[in-house]
Amino acid sequence: MAKTKSAYFCQSCGYESAKWLGRCPSCNEWNTFVEEITEKAGSKVPSWKTASGSQRLNKPTKVDDIRALGEERILTGDQELDRVLGGGLVAGSMVLIGGEPGIGKSTLMLQLALNITGKKVLYISGEESEQQIKMRAERITNQPKANCYILTETSTQNIFKQIETLDPDIMIVDSIQTLHSAHIDSTPGSVSQVRECTAELLRFAKETNTPVFLIGHITKDGTIAGPKILEHMVDTVLQFEGDRHHVYRILRSIKNRFGAAAEMGIYAMHGNGLREVSNPSEILLLQREEDLSGIAISATLEGARPMLIETQALVSTAAYGTPQRSANGFDTKRMNMLLAVLEKRCGFKLSTRDVFLNIAGGIKVEDPAIDLAILVAIISSHEDIFISSKVCFAAEVGLSGEIRAVNRIEQRISEAEKLGFEKIFISSYNLKGLINTKYKIELSGVSKIEDVFSMLFG
Ligand code: TYD
Ligand code: MG
Image (tube, rainbow, N blue to C red; front, top):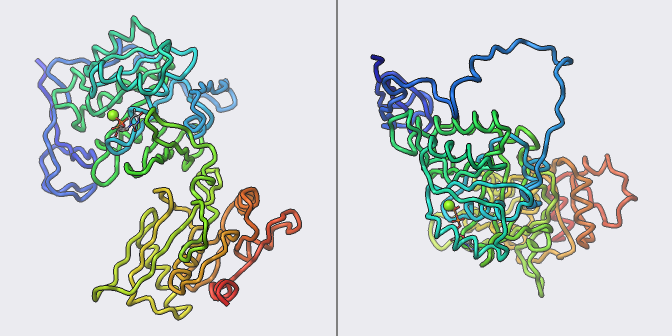
C-alpha cells in the first residue's frame, strides 16, 4: 500500500520543506512551519472530474501557426469592475479578490451575481447560511428574478458534483480559505488545502471555460492569506480596500494577465449595497465655503484614470519633545523625506513641529506626482497662508528639491481643466514637450521647489 506523504509548510509564504525548520529560509519568519499531509495513502492524481487531460501530449507549435482566438469578454454590468478587469471578464479566467473583513467583498460579488444579465451564476458560500445571503440579497436588489444559485458547501468534490448538473456560466467562491478537498488531510485554510482547492478550481475553470471568482482573506500585514503561489496561480488579483468608517471603497488590480495592472475602480457603500462612483474627482474635492490653509490639490493618476485629490496638512508646535509625524493615505517614509528636503533646501524649521498629513476620502495614493501638492500643503499650514482653490499641482519632488516630470501630463492637465481649475503647476521638463496654446488652463512650469514657494507665498 502506498504511504501517506507529508511535508512541512511555512504558513506565511508557503515554502515547502521535508523537515521542520525553526526559521523559514524564504521569508525569514520564525516558527511558521506546520506539518501537512500532501497526499493521502492510496489516492490518485486528483482532477475535477477524472484525470484525463494530463495524458494528452502537447507538441511545440510555432507562434505564427497558433490560431488566435478573440478573447471572449463577459460584461458584468458593473462598469468599475469591468474596467478594473481590463474590459470585462475573460472566459475561463480565475480572479482572486482580497480584502479586510467587512470591507464588502461578499457584497460586491453577490451584487455582481444578482445584476448580471443572461448568465447563470453559482455563488458558493462557506461562510454564511442561505438565509443570511438571502437577507443580503434583499438589501441589495428588489428584483428577485436573477438567475443566481446559492450553494452552501465547503467540500470541492461535492461542489463539482453540483456543478455537473447545474452547469453555471460564472462561479463565485466565498471564500477559498473555507474550502477543503478530500485529497488532502489538513484543515481548511492551511497552505496545502488552499493550494489544492485552488488547483482543482483552476482546472475546472480552464477545462470548461467558466470564469471563477475567488474571495480570499488577508492577513494582518495586508497580504492574501495562504501561500504566495495562490497569487501566481490565478490570472487576476484584485484588492478591495478602503477605510471601513468611510463610505468609499477602492478596487485595485494588482496583477492582471488580461489588462493593465494598477487599474482602479471606486465604489461607495450605501445601505443598499455598493454604488459605482464614475466621477471621483467631484467627491474627492471637498466643497469649501471659505479658504483654509493647509490644503493643496493634486492632479494624480490612478491606473489610467486622472483624479484630482485634496491633500491636507496640519503643522503645529510639538507638544512633547519628539515631534509627531503621521500620514493617512500616504507613505510616512516619503513624507519624512519630503520634510527633510524642506529643511535642507528651503530652510524651513520643521524639526520642532508636529506634522500630520491626510489624503481626503480615505484614499491611498502611490502616484509620485502628489509630492508637490503635499509640500505645498505643509508649507501652507506652516505659514498659515491659504492656496487658491483654483490652483492644482502635478509633479514629483527630488532629493535636492528639483521638480521632476511625471508621466501622462496631458491627461492630468485636461482633467484639471475640465473641473474648472485655472492654474496648474508642473515640472518645466513636462512643459517643454507640451503645446501650450491647446489649454485654457494656465500652465506654470517650475524647476525648483524654491520657485514654487516664492510664486505662491511671495
Ligand atoms: P461584507 O460584504 O460582508 O464584507 P466582507 O465579505 O468583505 O467581509 O460587507 C459587510 C459590511 O458592509 C458590513 O459592515 C455592512 C456593510 N453593508 C452596507 O453598508 N450596506 C449593504 O447594503 C450591505 C450588504 C453591507
Ligand atoms: Mg464575506
